Length: 338
Image (tube, rainbow, N blue to C red; front, side, top):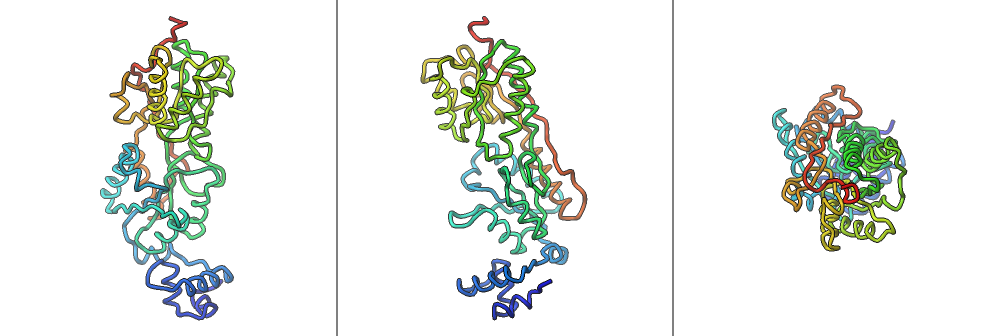
């Protein structure tokens, strides 16, 4: 097995320079950095970061997410971070938040942050299908936990919400009201949470003897504008839906805007259900029926599990917290059934 001295000899630099490159510290020219990284790749050198962490633990948890700096004002993200911070502080740890630049991939920032010695482990937001980040961190022996749903090939523990059960519960609510044409506004299929939400929606339809209509399922995206565009698309189909289940409250807000713009009355002409129960959900017009996700509890769970990994204690591979349907005035029996 190659050592840091072997890398230094191959790159014709000092061991200190190799450390600077691998840890992201010190001042090293681009040419030297490339030479060191080439030597690391050729020799298959793997630094033992976990052993180093045992000697010099920082007692800091790292959070890396795409565009998280712009998401700090998002109530859902802020509440998860609050739960993370509170639980970390209670256990004697701090929280460090970082976001990749346009020129740096998320995986590169994960490794650079861990190698810097500033954090003992990482929380990964927005777990994707076939996400490479957990495997990269596992190979480097860096403790990590991801927010999302179980996904193929993911090698780190996962914590999130039971979205399959939640979507099934929300769809059943609409079916009990008498709706038969129920649309789904889904998040990007690249995200691990997309599949279980879709599966819960389909399971409820099948249990009620209803067929899934592909024209009523739209991969909408994430923004309110995405929700508006998706709802406009649904209103243009030959037989529009009488109810809409949105994978996030933000998409639901956009759908409600589109319905009002088209002259429809939310909760009368078309029922709308969201997912998150953001603070605004109770104050829309009409107030939004939605799935309440315990985000602060999720943050605390992430912190406790990551600290257990850092301290070499066992944690469950998957932890899914239950969501609860909060019924407000955006859902009612369809006009035809009333």
